[in-house]
Image 1: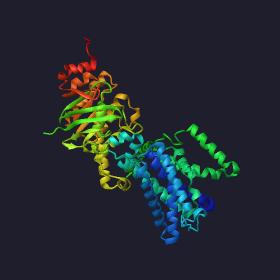
Image 2: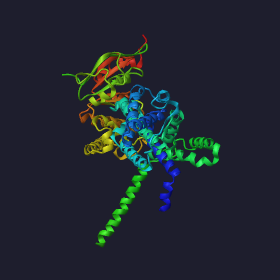
Image 3: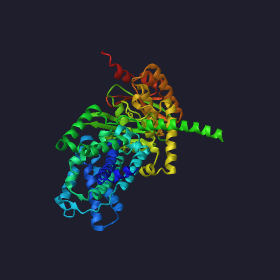
Image 4: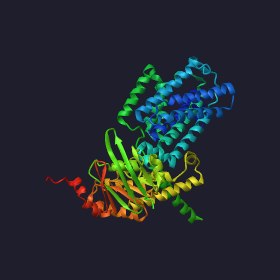
Length: 304
Length: 255
């Protein structure tokens, strides 16, 4: 027990795990946009940065409570997502991807040129308010949200859009509205992730939210299995921890990381957990447990 | 009395091609009405205009006396017109039940907040959606396959699932786009019985079909199209003996 507490108290371990949680919250937003609704976003880091800067600036200048700042970061990103969504979600596939990519670049360049964000020097001195407990709590909350969304009228409409947009429209789903909603919720999660990131790293630089970060987030969602929450959790964990475990190979680190990605895509093109139905596995387990429970209860009843 | 569905001189042009040229027709409540014609006559295009996927270049569509020309497809579905597709468009990677539940979408109202908060009324609505979906699946005899993935169903059952999905929307008018396409004789017989059962539920049916014996056996009224123009209308036997129709299908005798 002592050793477990000691393990989590180790500053390095603690930092890595907290960062994984932050990325997970962000990635879950992208999971909703890309995995569930089937809309490709290549600019998720842009929305993360909007949340990060909003939360950080509120902390530095207005000194409002940390949780409020993070929430405001999420709302700012969600609003940006909604505003971008209305015109651009009329596009599909590659075109939507290019638009989101462009948007993230615009955001990055705006932050480089604004005075209030510290420009290219970055924004320093953000208080370190994010800790492992809060991040874990929010991550679990996000996961529950995703499951509940998935299993609802709202979520089914989103899945229908992913499967066949025209048929979805003919089934009475206002596809544009639903896509915008999914985009707004997904970018809200990115903003919350960004706010947490800012208060963890304590320093923001627009360069941290470039194209490569956007693709990294997309990798998190795709590697584990597109459209699967356990897949997103696995993908995020593996890809955040892999570079840490690969530190011993020093300069070959990113090389091996990339090789792993390529191998992965060859052998499991649908993601590590692609095609695994966790719901069914879980239900089977529950049924077995219930049967077992009923049996023991029967025995117990007889004993009384 | 107004007809359930009335098309007034609808025309649609794709570039230089006049796909549908000033077609007027009526569907009365309680009918099984068929739209027939050779390939490329514009039958599916008319369906797409009624269901709002295409916007007519000119002309009007009235549903229950209401002008619905140019309405968005999702709006038209919620008004009570549901449809199936000629080239099956199921949500392939979802279960049979989920496909039908999605068909029920336009009759529900819970959104994101309800999904996350699980309000009592959200749960009640979910239950209602599930019951209605079961009912629709029972009509097409697919209830025992509800947990299968749509893509794993055999072809004939996929066609029936499309009908169940449309029925879940509680339509007043059901548009069936070639429901019997690719079915064998026995499957066609079953389908014919199903279509009649659906009519007895009080749903008016309009169908596009190539299979003449199917159309002639089941319809109360037939409209015939050729090259985007309406060439005949009437009861099946009237249409069968119409010289213009015979010419469109078999060609003209050389004198």
